[in-house]
Image (tube, rainbow, N blue to C red; front, side, top):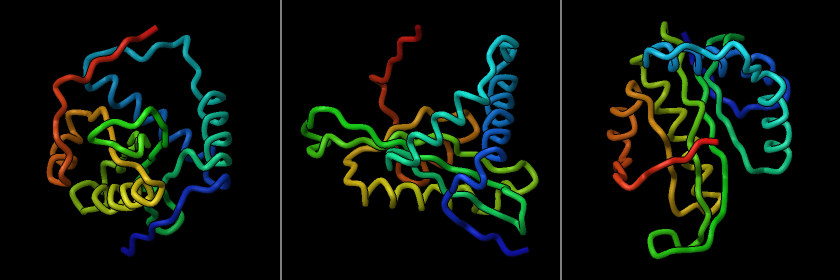
Length: 156
């Protein structure tokens, strides 16, 4: 088996959207939550990917085994007023990290993470944020991510 890595292009969007929904479903159900039946993410995800890929504010690397996508990663770029620990004000928001269960524990997630972190550095980001799933915490800690106890969120 030879794993090949490449950047997401519009050619893979429909496949990536299905994988993203599968990932979100897996995360929701593993936390004991029920996936809302009245939320259809397909159109919203397609709009997000097309707009942000075109604008250069989102990058994703994929892992392939032959023609099969077995891993994904994503990094959104945002900007806020600069501050001491991030003088550029440019932020990376890590998301969509997912590896097919049959390919886990093979270093694929680390390879994908390394590629999107390098993209964030090239973009000029001074900080990268992630809301990690329970499964992903060890990966991010081993890579050098630190917990930020001040993180809070507000949902509408």
